[in-house]
Figure (cartoon, rainbow, N blue to C red):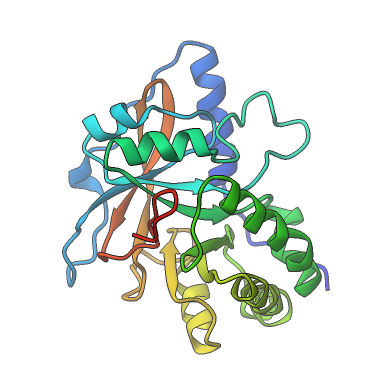
Length: 255
């Protein structure tokens, strides 16, 4: 069933591309002050992790900036985007660099969003995308027993969730569990709530689009909208961590 998408003035994907173009033009972004970042008042923030796609900052620079690690893409860049999406996929050299500096990695899969979202094809989409996620997670040194966050980088309606996203996540979950991995979900507050009701996901990474300023109590990670910085010349998003176990791993190790 064709998806109908609510408007989003600036998608995370468009912001990433704008950041990459800005760097090419010599523009340096300024980090959003941490004091302005939304937090869950009922839970302490245990630290911060990054996510990025336009380049790969060094582990030394990430550690020096005070972060615990990063959520990294087990996804290849879309055809035509290879020239600016330089941070996809995560590779073993990067995860080994992290491990050498005491940093951790978690895995996320998202190839496309918007009208061509991975989930739009429902269960058939998972049959295409899940094997790629598993392949790249393992190639980067990712162990079994850990989650892969599956991206729902949208503000879907409940009908879209029921007819497309739920079967997509169900099929993705089955594919991950078949090889000893777990399903994580990257989504907004309502989608996390629906997924929980269907028993889909044990790890949740929340974004702000459609979340109405709320942070889901089951979200281990919260991507604070607009909170970015430059590290090693790479535009990075900054995320608050609310759980000791946020799906992290090191090569060959599940913790």
